[in-house]
Structure formats: structure tokens, C-alpha cells
Length: 301
Image: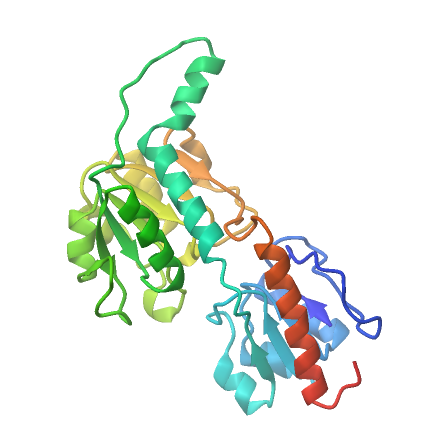
């Protein structure tokens, strides 16, 4: 059994399963995944956000099961898996509450400038700056399904008005669904909660940042590839937007240019689901899926 995801810590699995963990303890490159698959020829893979394409699957003749440690399957070539008779599972435990809570915490930190205020006390400046207010702000939600919906519940209770963009959602209980351009040009705060695919890679680029309101705030706890980082850096440098809070990056661990903006960015190490018992529940269900899948394939586990 090969475990791609660097954050998997669950240990309560049958002794008959030999679990090979990600030796790099970070997101793997395609070449690294391929190297591990060829070296271990696993019966099953516990998948993170690394791409699992047909070439990688074919490099593991024994591969029978792929169990995604999470709800999104955007990184797995499901057509190839079906063709190769590989069962694909995902978890049903969605990290909607922890992801939504982190999103709201990030929004509040940006709006109320908590980093700057904390620094002013620690550096003995005691600057009692007037900050923004979340109440009455217009929040644009990109991706209005499980997690986006949970965010909408919380934002509604803060007295925010809500705009949403999601190609798969036409109507929503709390959110006024609009096209992306309208949402970008009319929102004070924009938060992303969408799976990543070829059709929305770098969904937010130079054009989209130019459309945003001056001083808009950006939050991404979803997928790093949804935002063109160069365009985001440019928008921050030119003060087109007021700040950004990012939990997910195309390259992790992150060592990129967003580190140059400590005053108006909040950067966290891909931890949206790491709260309460959610991570344990997700990892346990992933292992249960592996065991179920292998048994259905006739493997004695």
C-alpha cells in the first residue's frame, strides 16, 4: 500500500497491510509519484492531491484500489482507472465545517487587520488603527456546493450579502447566483471553494484581478491552481487588491513571492481540514475504503 499524501497519520490498519508513506513529507511531483509506484508496485494507493494519470496507473500492474483521502477526485484520471479495472473511492466525511471556519477566520483577520494590530502591540507602537467591518460587506463565493454553502451560512449570519459563481449551481438558498465577471466586479471579498480541473486552472488571472473592486480581499482554502500566483502577486504589489489569505499552493511547502507581503497576506500550510476529529474521521474512512476495495478484488486483508 502506497500513501501519497504527506499528512496521513492514521495507524490503525490490519497487520497484513504494509503501508509505504510519502518519504518526502510534502506534495509529490509527477516524477516522484511514478518513481514510488514503480519501486513498490502497490495493490492500493492512498491518494492526496497529486495527479494520478493513466501512465502512473499502468506503471503499477498490481494496482487495484485508489482511495482518495478527501472528497475531490479532480487529481485522479477516473476514465483510465475504469479502463484498467482500478476501483476509485473518496471519503464522504466532508471537511465543510473546519474549512468554512478557517475561511471566516481568515476573512476576519484581513478585514479587522489583526496581524497589523498584533504587531503594533508587540513592537510597542500601540497604533489604534480604524479597520474595516465585515457586517454589510458583499462576499463573492466561487464554488457553492458543500463547503461554499457552509461558508454562506456563516457569512449570512454576519450580515453579509452574498454573490456566487458555480457552473453546476443555478439557484441557492442563501446566495444570489451570477456570472463570474459580475461577481468579481461587485464583491468586497472573494473566497474560493471549487474543485480544480483543466477548465478552471488559473481561473483568477490578470484579467480577473483587473475586474475586482479596489481593495478587494481574496481567500483561497480550496486548490492552489485556481489562482495564477503571478497575477495575484502583481495585484498585491500594485495595491489593486487589499490583501489575500491563502491555505493552498501549487507548490507545497510554499517558498514563493507571497512571503514578500507580510502585512496584508495570511499564509497557512494547507490545514483547512485539520481541526477537531475531522482529519481522523477522513483518514479512517480512507483506510476503510482501501480495505473494502481490496476485499472486493479478492485480496485477503
